[in-house]
Length: 196
Image (tube, rainbow, N blue to C red):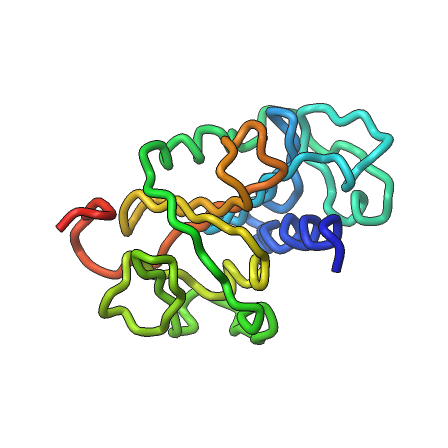
């Protein structure tokens, strides 16, 4: 699968299916990037390679129209999500190299985060089902789109803050893409990563 395909798949996967959250049912464009979120995960990508030849405005777009090669705004900019504000909560996070195994992308998941089998990330970036040495717990379905990607880094602030994934150490403004996931609650305290 090409880089183009996986980025669009990641955007489409993050589009909310909840009809009551209409502004999350589409792919948005602002701050020069496409984004999609369902409230639990957020994919942000440069539009190059996904919608070449179109002049995008700060609007919401139908994911189906973009996939078919035509785009049309469906709402005004007042319904856009400010992804930079969401990502601002990650400032000061600890950078950890991470390897998300390819098999994680081939597993068929139940339809909700409550399906019961979280994965955990340890301080050295290993994925495990054992929460003993875990820094953070995640719904495996939410990171399956990153399975098998080389050179990934994750940024973790604490066990309850959003977790950022990127394929380089670049900042979010210059990155080709990045992916943010809300963790599952592991414990009652909000301890900083790296704290004893």
